[in-house]
Length: 70
Image (cartoon, rainbow, N blue to C red; front, side, top):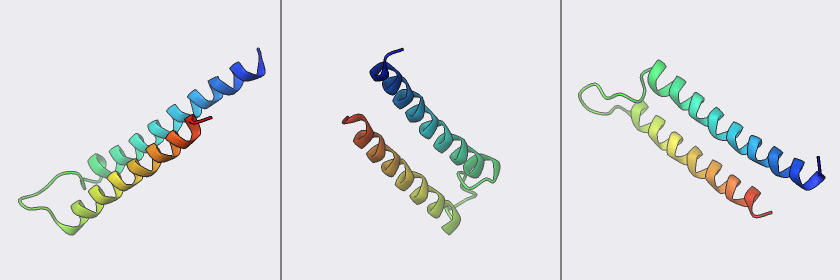
């Protein structure tokens, strides 16, 4: 396999791995531990979870955008 093709496939696999890892962590913390659901009104734990989830999503998307600039 050519070096450019191999590097491109590794870039694709790494990008998928980052996104899947982010999703698994958010599902674990949000659904399994219950921070994604409100019980009446949102608590500080719910707000912290959502702020961190969207903040890390922004950071991952920014990192992927930089990686894909090549």
